[in-house]
Length: 161
View 1 (tube, rainbow, N blue to C red):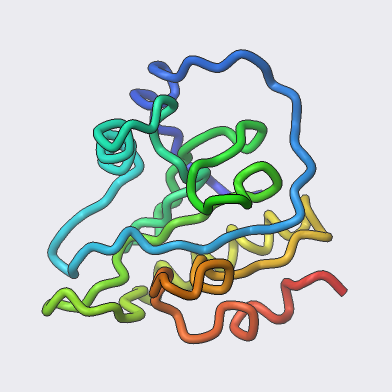
View 2 (cartoon, rainbow, N blue to C red; view 1 turned 90 degrees about the horizontal axis):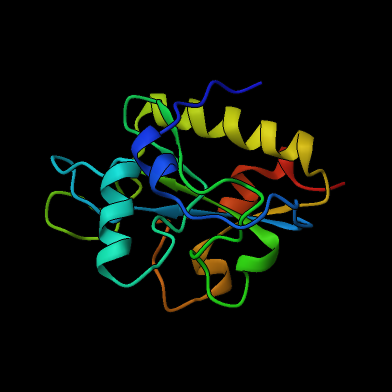
């Protein structure tokens, strides 16, 4: 099982009506689109999303920090707000980064992030074996997110058989 740091500020402010699990068929990988010296914790993303009008706050289910720490966002049973037309049946995973120092899209994952992402995605694959792992841009080609060349190929061993 993956060790996940719960964000108590986010969880205590959530206003949820039920805990019925959804049918998950997709895991969508995102980046937070911040430069190397900028941070984007689950709490920060929660604030940004609330400022943009997301009533339930952070749209991602997990945030993977540069140091490899995995933070919880929305509970898995609650639909995310991370990929239009796909939230109902997907889990959203966001890694901190995605822009180089000039603000251009780039794969900025640290070795710790890559290891933590693989561990988290393997755990999600174990629990949702029919879920396909894709990048946000695979579902919306106008997006550079998650700034990884080929998500499906990188995680081919974790795709449904």
